Amino acid sequence: MTTPNRDQVVSLLGEIQDPELHRGLNELHMVRNLSVEGSKVTVTVALTVPNSASRPYYLEVIPAKIRNAFPHTKVDVDFVVLSEDERLALSESMRKDSPSPMAGSDSKTRVIAIGSGKGGVGKSTTAVNLAASLAKGGYSVGLLDADVWGFSVPRMLGIYEKPSVLGDLIVPPEMFGVKVVSIGLFTSEENPVMWRGPMLHKALQQFLEDVHWGDPDYLLLDLPPGTGDVAMSIAQFIPGAAMITVTTPQAVAEKVAQRAAFMAEKTGLKPTGVIENMSYFTCDHGTRYELFGRGGGETLAQRLRVPLLGQIPMDPNLMEFADKGAPIVLQAPDSAVAQAYDLCAKELVNLLQPKPKAKKRISLPLGGN
Ligand SMILES: Nc1ncnc2c1ncn2[C@@H]1O[C@H](COP(=O)(O)OP(=O)(O)O)[C@@H](O)[C@H]1O
Ligand SMILES: [Mg+2]
Image 1 (cartoon, helix red, strand yellow):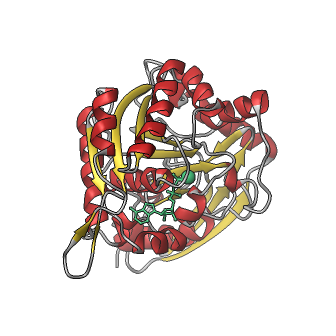
Image 2: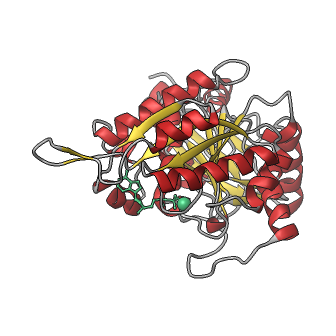
């Protein structure tokens, strides 16, 4: 029977990443005590907060990892919690080597705002599914719900936990490989915020600068409907950020979307593509109905001189999936809607390659592999 030595255990622990901070345990200096006596290993891990989501993860992953290499070991994991000073020091060190996406030319991140003229056209549905599709494709993705008045991203992704706060750094929860921040994670749907003007500007700045996004390949922003302050603030923080406009096929909707896109362009966002949503409905017998007219997406794309990235059909299941907190691109990947979104994501990647080259997501060592 082989028993591990201390160095072997240290090296195994080094392969484990903190699920919230996305850094190696050793690199974070989170292993506070380690005892290796024959086949008995005891590991003490530091948590950022007492009820950290990392706790159940470590309880499962650390024994699995060690026993995978040394099957007869008995592994105990216990925890300590970082002091306020230690948390601050950690947030400082993470801030230092992880510039915010708006830090400028040295940032890898492509920032893409998803906008529309009016509400209810499927902006959030599009933002969530594009994000999930990009993550599925191996890209690291952040999603900022900038619809501060009508936030819906947390519910659509089934995220209800508050983000951890490390000193003054917000650590975004991650779902389906997408890091998410929304004002909805700090407040309840019944208690909307009434932010305007400078407060709103400051809040958006905080969401961009004080969130540990970790320089993802793509950061998608779900904008509120219309032509307002949010787009203007975003453009100020990230000049030249790309903008995808979502419209439905009818002419009136296209006109409203066009106004919003031109306004956004004036403020400094760069129209990059159009997605037409609710393009058609296919009944059980295979007949295709264009319930909301046709051509809106194509016309808008021509007016803005950008490509039409895709046309998303109607699917009654979409609402159900959204209410369950499950993006359709993951839950029903073979559905026509999912395939249309996957295609849009591919087109988007073709248009905006990650800078400087695709960075693959680091997969967590689940199950001790
Ligand atoms: N292609 C579609 N087929 C069926 N329902 C859709 C489709 N796109 C969006 N919806 C539904 O329409 C409603 C509005 O979508 P949402 O993404 O919240 O719009 P917005 O963010 O533009 O206000 C939601 O209930 C959503 O589930
Ligand atoms: Mg929305």
